[in-house]
Image (cartoon, rainbow, N blue to C red):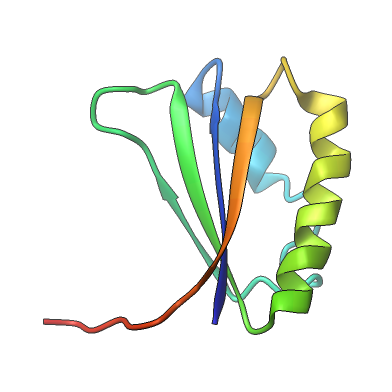
Length: 94
């Protein structure tokens, strides 16, 4: 499993969430299996998103699509996106 982790500043959560829910990159079609959204407990104007993929290729294609999208919306919906691709090494419910 590969995780595309994204983090960036947002002007407000409600506006960002509405844009996220509109799904402009069609997450399911490009291979997203699931996603998680996090916010630091002390910063309501920041989000961290984990997108889960089955393959590295799917994650790289999604990242390319997101970079194109960000060029259109940076400064309005979000600012200064940072990304990393992660391999899930271990996960265990306790």
